[in-house]
Image 1 (tube, helix red, strand yellow):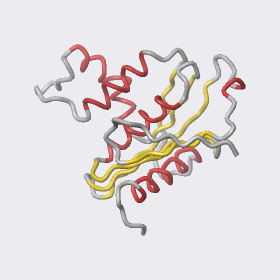
Image 2 (cartoon, helix red, strand yellow):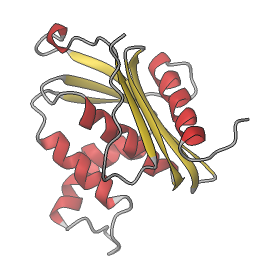
Image 3 (cartoon, rainbow, N blue to C red):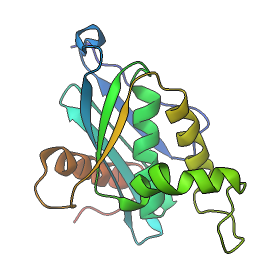
Length: 178
């Protein structure tokens, strides 16, 4: 089995794993969107955090942090996908986080214009992650579509990503297994 386990340098997460087993990027047709579920979790909010993303048993990733909010881990899941999947590949990102979807499809335009300051004059939460995601999205050649699903409602990609997020919270965030 050809597995690639990547441990990135210079991110705030304590740890991360990405699995790419025999995934043939050449088989992804031009204009086709691969579907990936993304999810984050925080045990305590803030507390032991984890995130996960899932396309298939041969293409997924997860990680975590000792102390993070749920929203920060939701963003880390998206960031990990964008760093892992070649920028030429189109993506349909399936999330249960309206915060992430709205941040990247609605609020980002005003935030850019206002220097990432809210209408109340505060720096936006998770500024670094949002700015990095914004840059990665702008530089992608492949189309990106965001789709919202209700969490814990049985969507297979969301459920798989949720399971990986919880594994990340335990393995890298120190959360206790329940």
